[in-house]
Amino acid sequence: MTLADFIDSALDKLGHLYPNRECKSIAVRLLVELGGYSNYAHLVEPGTVIKEEKEISLKTALERMGSGEPLQYVLGFEWFCGAKFNVREGVLIPRPETEELVMLVSKYYKGRNKVKVLDICTGSGCIAYSVASELGNDAQVWGCDISDTALEIAGGQKICGKDGQVRVNFFKCDVLSAEAKDTIKVAAGDGFDVVVSNPPYICEQEKSLMRSNVLDFEPHLALFVPDSDPLLFYREIAVASKSLLKSGGMLFYEINERFGAETKAMLEQLGYTNCQVIEDLNGKERMVAATLV
Image (cartoon, rainbow, N blue to C red; front, top):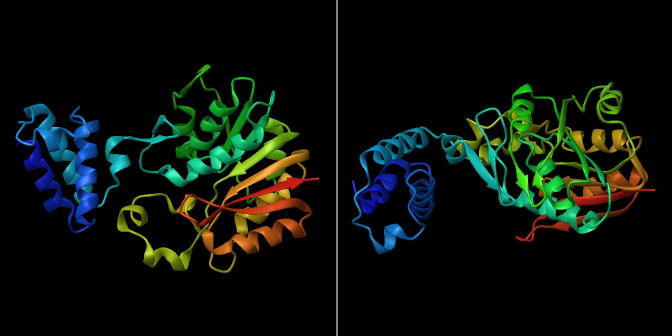
């Protein structure tokens, strides 16, 4: 099998799931990550014969993806803020737009000393580790989640920043429980400068708009909220954060673009100030920042 043959095979195996252009992008990434080829090898040397052992792993990857399994689970990792994060079924795959949430926190807090950060609904730990890396080794960062699988994966990440290996403390917490504040205070204390979260925010009614590779494989626990209460996690986190944040501390969310105004209004009603709805690079209302007086 040549590189060109593999590209054609990807179009054949994945065409029922993805547009042709995306199939080609997936094939190229597989060639890079599993085959060790450059991003442009298929263009400049399309007749290159793939070695047998690499061909086997590439064909296996296509078979798995052909059943709908996400590319990141097949590879076992995803890149986020320049670092490789391990992922597998049971943990949400890090998204590029979430990198903008990390950069937003960095915008406000980079250069400050001993910043104390809590990442709620941490999942793979991508936000927690990336914020810790951005803010430097004297930052104290905790991450919590209800999922044992997510905590196992997050705790096993080996992320290196410019100051060496990045360290984050993880613990289990159901942020919707009545004991959430006490659980957090026992595990991490209070007096946080930052609470950041990318919680579940997709309404159940939006399932019909989602691809099968997300809907059938990624954890619903990390994705969905009831149609009747789309601000469920935002509200509970904001209420808990009133006793967790220092005066002047900030709350940062990734949000459902449909509910920017509602999220902002909810935070203002709870007494937060300087509430901002912030667009991502695609012009979607994707983040909210607020300050506790």
